[in-house]
Length: 250
Image (cartoon, rainbow, N blue to C red; front, side, top):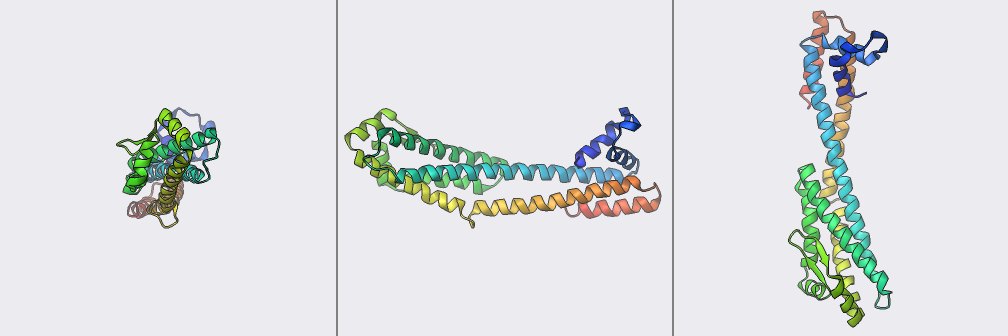
């Protein structure tokens, strides 16, 4: 049971029989009577829990982004393993995989940017989009075999045009796909590196999560202490000191 549950139980426990109450519920109800110390503790505990929930959500979003970029990198590398003699079905499957994972990485980067409120995630999308446009010769070659980049950076593929190009000149198609894979792989490698901006954002969030978890546990302990103290001035003074300490660090 986390802080929010302890706090909630203090306001809903009036309809619960004494025998059915947990020790935490009893402690929370007792702490609720210690005012203003318990009120300050309730507010501080709720704030810590809210910040921890937000940080956890941001870390989850970054995890999805890392996974998406990794998938795009694997698909990009597979293009380098194709040859002009590769079965048409294998080539088509590899191309479709690259388009799918590339687009997912682009959209995931933008979504993560909104959740994490960080420009580092958005930059992943921008960098991947520029990977395609950074080399005019490659971009022109891609257009000739059916690729098109939309304004949001994602790719589309004209299957009919691609099949025709592959039949007409499989070696040229293979060479173009290899260059595309190399460009995407290069950007993905940079974004997934240990010293990348994304890695820095994740490290900062992990540190924040660790701190908040420590504060959450300490606040839960404080709530228990408040619940077992008498309503004397000594008890109230202790509670006020403890709450003030956590408020100053959050």
